[in-house]
Length: 502
Image 1 (cartoon, rainbow, N blue to C red):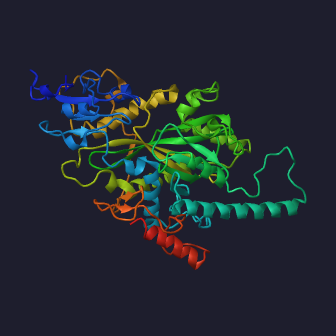
Image 2 (cartoon, helix red, strand yellow):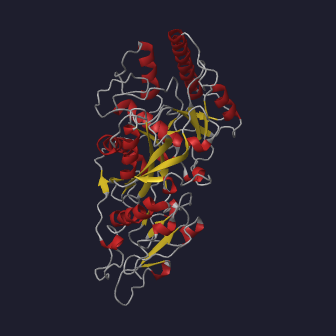
Image 3 (tube, rainbow, N blue to C red):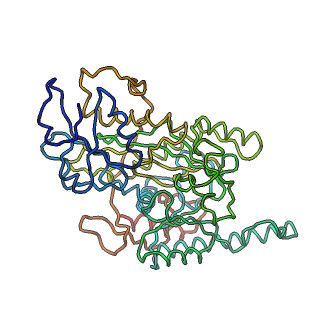
C-alpha cells in the first residue's frame, strides 16, 4: 500500500518502487469519513494508528490526522527521519477556536482595520465593512473585572432604553399589554447568551434576560473559569418559524492559503422560536447534540439539515407568506459571509501558524464557522470550531461530506504526497473527478499580537500582551469613525481597543 501504519516500514521501498508513507488517524468526529478517500483502492491507504499522547511520539508519521480534543506531540513535530510530514492541525488554532480568544482577536482587529463599531448607528451605506460578530464580553467566574463592569454598564443602558420605549408605547396606546400576552419588563437588559470559553456541542450554554441572573450563574461556576457574555440575536431570520444557523466550512492549506467551501449546510431547530422562553435550550441551540435527542428531530427537515438550495426555497416560502423580509442567499448572504471569513483569517492567520521554519508548510486545518442571520438578513459569526463534525446525518450531509473531504485531501495532502503515477482508475465517481468547490480567498493577514486572556498586568515571557481592558470594551471599531457620540465615549472606546489589547 501507499500508506502504512508502521514507522519502521518507512525506509523499506515496495517491489514496485512506490513511496511508502506512515499515517496516524484518530477516532471520533466522523473519522471514518476522514479516511474515506485514502481508503480507496490505488489511492492513499492509511490504517489507524493511535496518535494519542505518547502514541504520537512513539510513531513517526508522514501524515497525522487527529480528531477533536486529541493531544498532539508538538515537541516532536515535524517528525524526524521521515522527510516531509503533515498534521491536520494548526499550532495556534485556539486563537479562533476558543470563544474567548476569538472575541478578543476580532475586537482588536476591528479597532484598527474596520470602519464600524458596536454602538454605531446603522447607516445602511452597504460599504461591505459592517461588523459581522456580536457584542461580546470576556469574563471570569467569581471575579469582578473591567469586562464584567463594562457589560453591566451596557446592560443598564439597554434597560434604560427599554424603560423609555415601554413608557412611550404605553402613552401612545393608552393601555397596557393584555395580561395573557408575554412581554419583556421595562427593566429588561435584553437577552444575552453565556457560554464557556472552550466547550463545544452546546455544553454549558445558557440564555438570560437579567444581569442578576447572569452574575448568579457565573458565581456558581469554577472560580476563575473563562466565559463569554454575548448579545443574543433576539429577532433573527427564521426558517418556517424556527431558528437555524449556517455551518460554513473553511480551510487553511499547508501553504497558508485560505479556502471557503461553496456547498456547506444549514442546521435547524425542531421547536418554534420564542424569545420569551429562555428555559428550553432546544429552542435556541441548533447543535446536533441538543436536537437529536428530541422526538421531533428530523420531523421538519431530514436530520434537521438543509443544503443551500433548500434553504433558499424555505426563505422564499416564508417571504411569500409575509412572515419575514426577502433574503437572497446567493447574492446577499454569501458575499457577506465571504467578507467575514476573509476578516477572520486576516485577523488571525499569522497567529494560527506562527512563522517557525521547522513547522511552516507542515500544517493544515479544516474549520466549521457558525453564522446566524440577523433581522436584516446580514450574517453574524457566532463561533469557529476545530475538527467540525463530519458525520453523514441525512441526505444533505451524505451527499456533500464525501465530496468536501475528497477535495480537502486533494488540496492539502495530494499536493504534498501525490498519488503514484501508476495508480489505477478510481472505482468511485466521487474520487475520480477533480473537484473545485473550495473557493480560494484573497486574505491579507495583519500583524498578530497574541493576548493572554487569562488576565494579569504584565506582558508574558513570550511577549503576549495580557488581557486587562481598562475601560469599556464595547466598541470594536476604527479610531475616529464613531458617529453621533460624545467625546468621552469615543475616547473610552479608543483607549480600550487601541491600547489595552496591544
